[in-house]
Image 1 (cartoon, rainbow, N blue to C red):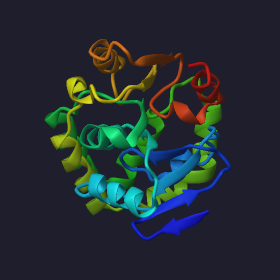
Image 2: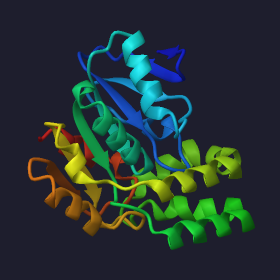
Image 3: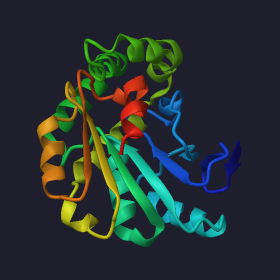
Image 4: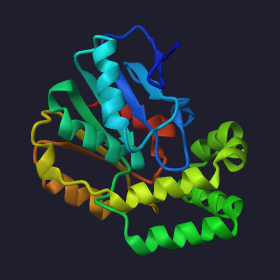
Length: 233
């Protein structure tokens, strides 16, 4: 494991290909802590939303990495799509988790108001809503490893900046035509990103693989079923 100058951490896991892991809003790279996929990992130490594509492209050039795979969860899915759209020749595959076409302005406004009123209480509810009622195992891991740190460490300024970024984002499938391999995974019980929006994106990407993760919520990739389904494609 080593830190790279552009603000990324590289984890050499002994595999041929490298996967960039992009976390969602109100999280960081630690959310992928129990993810065990057959790749080396490249994880942002911090996500500079406005310069991410440029930062990653520069890093790949400096490290002589010709191509990478991208895994974007939730907000990270928008980042992954934007990079893939701008640098399709650098992307082996695009893996999108818990995505939606866009977030409604009213939802983002309500979230900001609630955060400013009581940041910790809003985050606690948000994190619990990321798990389905049936996924006790994943919620237990999250509570044990991340919940306390996230509640204490996710500062208001960064959270609001993330909401503002989400307000500008939209996934336009037609702009991803240059990516040959796309996979979309989505929890059937996702309360944050409606399943219907992910299905609509898939309908406009006929070559993409779509995997519906039954009985799981927004943070479904902590569940062992994700790896099981991941390898079946």
